[in-house]
Length: 128
Image 1 (tube, rainbow, N blue to C red):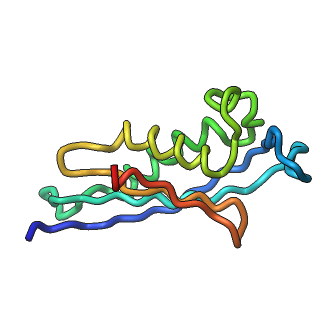
Image 2 (cartoon, rainbow, N blue to C red; image 1 turned 90 degrees about the vertical axis):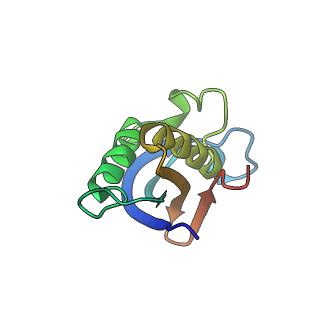
Image 3 (cartoon, rainbow, N blue to C red; image 1 turned 120 degrees about the horizontal axis):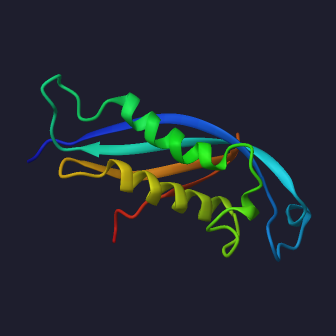
């Protein structure tokens, strides 16, 4: 059986959005203080004994989050075309961060995006 380490960091950003075609109050512009939980699997440790440095994970998550921070999401690609729902934002962030971090021994496994303290979505491509 091969070793596997699951690492997690938490970051945050704030932004506003409008849900197009939504039959309720969220069809009006409103904002959230989003919390991002990034999960990464490592199958090997480096010479220091780390699968990946938490700092590297936070940097990648913050770089993507900074593109969205204090912005109106509907004005940004890809949300000019797709609705900036929590699901779509989570998938976007997952893919962008995975492109930065994935390697032979590192794989982004999931991204959980908290819209409020009581509502979140977890996005993964594990079963594909």
